[in-house]
Image (tube, rainbow, N blue to C red; front, side, top):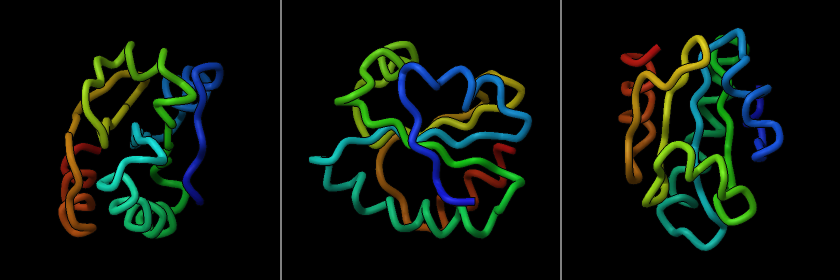
Length: 106
């Protein structure tokens, strides 16, 4: 499964109402560290397939979702299970560290 672009309008449907765990990446086009982890998240999305959804929220276009989650810096990652956030991580990490964090959180 490829990463899914999520907006303020689709956040509840794509994230909170998902039947599988969701990793939400709050990012922006101008953010260097966000661009660093983007390819790793795409690869992880393919590796997890339908077991985990990886969603990306552009904070510039969708400020309400970021504000609701208390995002103050990006990249900010959250894992949602059963509609609620169960883990969060701030800043860029290598792919292996992201995978380990996701595995521990789901």
